[in-house]
Image 1: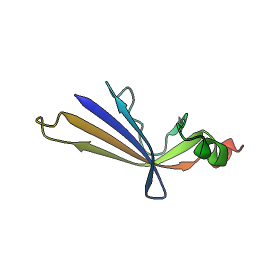
Image 2: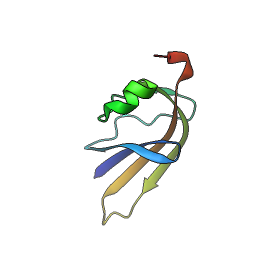
Image 3: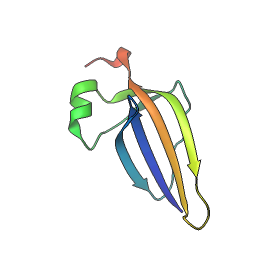
Amino acid sequence: MKYILEIYHKEECIEQRNMEDMLFRPNAGEQIYIDFENRFYSDEYGNWWIVKKVKHLIFSNDLGINMLQLFCEPDPDEGE
């Protein structure tokens, strides 16, 4: 099984990671720390984000893919 994690901000995918196992599944309202591959987001917004919405996409067994989409906003309490 292949797992894909996507982080969205303002309806745009800003980070995508392929994983062997989905180690966590945060709920809406939870705070997460993201070490972005594109440093722009860390520099601009910081590394602490709040999950606003979660979507699980489960595809057919033929594809062997599960996707977790997190729609997030920077955490204003964790200012730079």
